[in-house]
Length: 166
Image (tube, rainbow, N blue to C red; front, side, top):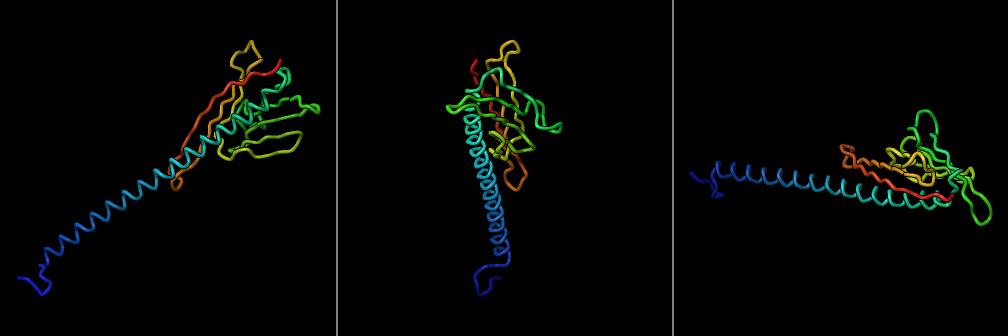
């Protein structure tokens, strides 16, 4: 038996169920799209940051004398070999430069003045690729950035080698 609308109660219930399924599916699709957007945005940001970090460190350290390089850590809580101190020759004299990790921050210290270079460092390490040759230094930077609602992290690892002046 039909009412004035021309639909039975069963047809109305089926239509409502189909609309609910479509809305739920669209919501899941939209949520997945947002997650991908945030993950991709974080990935692009940390890849750019890694490039800028490597360029900054390499350009400053490559002009240092190999004999002036000191590898250490900022304090006992920080990872081993997460700090490098160098003396760099400039046109007006020498400059004391340090790069180091404190927690998730990467610092540059030039003649006592500190600057935060990055806020997403997971691990920074400086090592010699060959123990019998101090003319080259290897820089490993691992970046980590939280993505969608802090539920996932995006990681990026970069390893660069820089030749020092003798």
